[in-house]
Image (tube, rainbow over all chains, first blue to last red; front, side, top):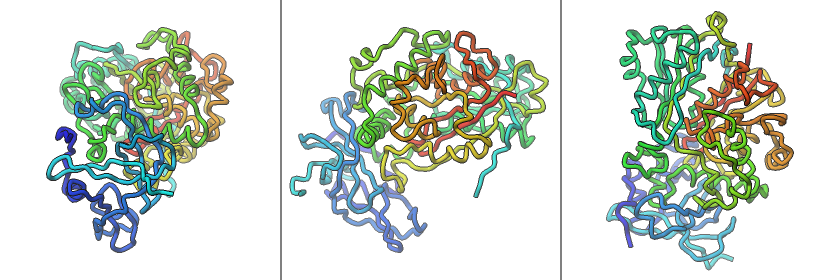
Length: 138
Length: 389
């Protein structure tokens, strides 16, 4: 069930990112000049300083770099979920992009676990990323 | 480009603090005023000698202009009101040192006042939640917002890479507690065993309760003047021999690929270069310990152990106050003295350098390293080398 209190308030640089998630897509900015990927969404490429960043659908796949298990809810909307696992996922597009999200699969988590992004709608305009174990991974 | 800090041209000459408690019963404004007055009195100076004030915080305290007006300081020459937390806990002192070295101010008092338990709690659970930084929007729905979660993530990465264990983290908690037992300022003065640690409840795995620092109401202030003026004041000056701050890698900053690396490494070389010495010359260290793991990671990052080498040294007692080769957090730190956001580490270092630490006094106390939060969260860190004249 969606809890609106968990929805962040986007800014002008991030509204497209959260809107895409609400519509079921994980989009990451890629620089139209140098090709580097940038996350979180920002107004400038931190590699070549171009402002020609284009939001593109990401593969949505990656692997777990680290994880924690939260035993205290950080917000009222998370009370029913504790304890829950937060995974920090290195996405396949670029090895220095690490995206946190709740791991929703009931699997034994480990470093290198292959995962897939599951966008979840929080409001009409804002979504979030969950991660699930990628059963198709070899 | 090399960055040169004006070596030993400024000194900490006065220190002041309030009681550290769970409920001060007064405003942060009152706490700040008390600590600042205590610091200038300790320095043999008067409030009217202050012409600069520096503080930091996360919109949870009193700003320098309001404090100056309340203290009756008619004309301020310099001030700093830095947004951020523990990452800048000692760079405010470094910047005060720059100001007095450059002559733009004569006497700067750095302070941190907070009602961190009774008013604005860092975990966001109080009625007056802090306003988060920009990147909170990308962590909010996950509940990845308390510092404990983010630093536990790094601790896990270190465990995976080097085999660091819960027991290793527990020994750091016990070390800190042992150092607080005879510290009259400390909030936690009952013994803690490794077993107590291992039995304590999970907060965010791999962190248990005793991996996490305290929540504290209180204030600390330190007075900074130039080295010439310091000679005429009552206490042995603690010279700011070197300083570095900055760094630049965190979770929202592309360029980081493994959280197990100590972010303190990004400033340690510059710190030692500025101070004109190396890790072997440091006699004691007061390191930012919002969590046990940040202590471990800084011991590595400032070159006191190889990556992965802290547990062996810890087991040998290397960091014990009474017998260790490098006493660490001689007051019990944020884990057991109190969460004064790191400025209490500066206070302790100055007491040690003066030889005024009483039962806590260490033998070799001329050169100490004091560090702020090592570079998670904001991505920045700060560190000082303080030395006796």
